[in-house]
Amino acid sequence: MPITKSAKKEARKSLRRRATNREGREALKKTVKQYRKLVAQKKFEEAGAFLSQVQKALDKSAKANLIKKNTASRLKSRLAHAIARASKASS
Image (cartoon, rainbow, N blue to C red; front, side, top):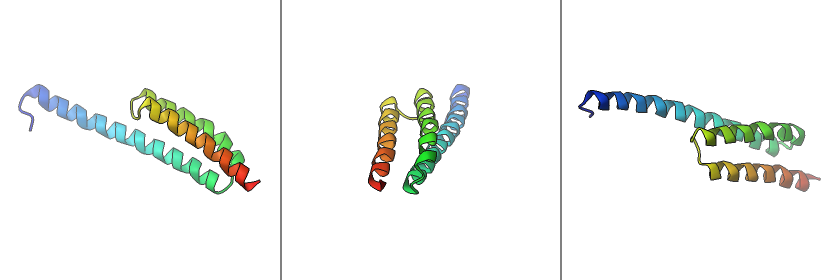
């Protein structure tokens, strides 16, 4: 347990930051899941429009250090390839 006043304050700040970061990551996961669901349901036009929103969310999360920059880039690439593969397979 923290003993000094500053350590107690840091512990409080850490809990607040943890909650904020957790909310951000959960919102990001939810957005990615919605996109993958659209692709799985073969709603390619909606998914294509939604892809830019997903990429924007990934970039913002990387900028806020919720996820690493390379992780965001990798996910953006995989999500873009997912719609391309699915649309090619269905046609």
